[in-house]
Length: 295
Image 1 (tube, rainbow, N blue to C red):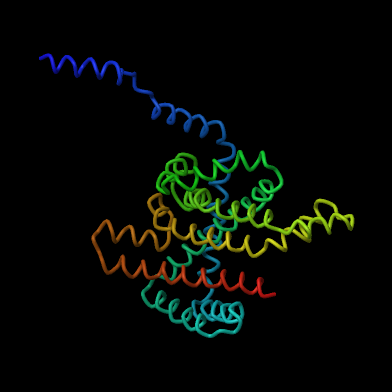
Image 2 (cartoon, rainbow, N blue to C red):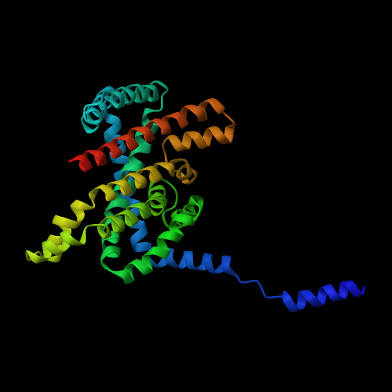
């Protein structure tokens, strides 16, 4: 009895009972508040952007698969410096996806990755430039990037569904948040690594800030920025399966459906399709970067 009283006394001193902080309720209230307040932004995006993405996917699907495969193989041949191995892999890999009946799903996946990656680059590069020019902006934005990269990817589905419902648009939104940080960080890093002598030389010739940025700093930082873009594209692709949980079409939906039905074969084939697409995109972006570095 005495030991029990002593234990309660210790808990009361060192672990006093504190009322539960209603974080979940606050978050729900804030999400609903943002959704209602900015509905004039979210609703037009959902109503107009979703048809646009479907139109892009239908446009690519309308191209005969054989022609599209040949075009991508030729592109791979020239981008890699006339190396034939990636072209052969592209032809065999994309033909295999078409042979298994997943061509339309591949196009939907590529559309989602392409649009989310482009948006990430359009948003990320200017923010990275701002960070490189302002220490205050870097101090403010860096913790936000840390938060975006450490937060589990599944969590991004919650605001995506709250703001845009289900479909391709919330999938792009979640991929955008998850994939943007590398472009921002590498842009900031690349510009800060530009030789101070070159910058001072451009200033001595009377270059304006914009001329210095576009004619000296960005060209010199291009290799680093391209490395960040490569990481952004791969992160966007990694969100394909996760985005399928909120209705995003593509190969990810097939993987998720196979997982729910315990269909190992179907899930494996769809997963192979994602791997093939990832290898092709990764090698193409890396080859573009190497080509620029050699130049």
